[in-house]
Length: 263
Image 1 (cartoon, one colour):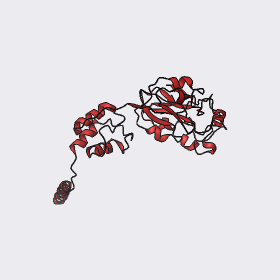
Image 2 (spheres, helix red, strand yellow):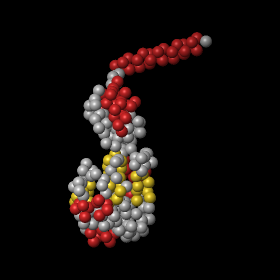
Image 3 (cartoon, rainbow, N blue to C red):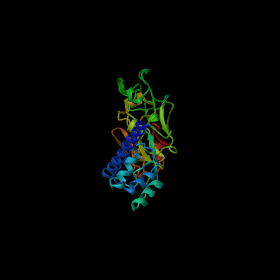
Image 4 (cartoon, one colour):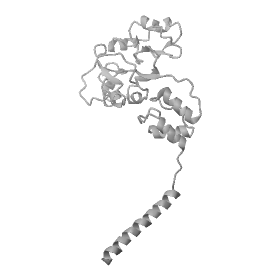
């Protein structure tokens, strides 16, 4: 009986001692939490997509609280979340432009030619390293194996007719697909932008026509017909300045290759 009592006292005493030591250590090594950081973290959507450029929502909240990131740091939350964080930080948000991802390739299966049949791992990252940068005759075209689809956490991008297509209503402009594309075909554009160039090839006209029915040949007809001076041809491909574009559609109407489209 005495042995049991002694063992109980020893265990209880040890537990009490450990509790006291933990309490002392907790106070000594306590890290003060910034209340604003906690509030900002609660305001963020919690997707942890990394679209803000920080390691998840915790990292973004810490950066905003320290003044190292703007209040509109979250592309997924958009204007509502930016306004909430702005109120926490006591800052005005200003106007924010909603964006969406766009895949600059309209070379569907029936329009883009192939040099060979690819039977390897169906992933764009792998296929981009095989001879010619993939099976397509156009070295700049979408490979269609869906690396961007796997990277998207919002089910906003799918492969249709051999090319990736973005659903702007689902897209949160997090940029994950932009990073995943080995061909650098995906860019973030204003949500309201309806006229887009569906080609990023810098090959010369003859090579483009041999590879794809809808590739840009740098003819400059779009540039000459744009009343706003919003489209120019650089490195044999058309580029739109979205800040100048009025979405009039004249460039699309005058494009002989139909690579400028109204999406």
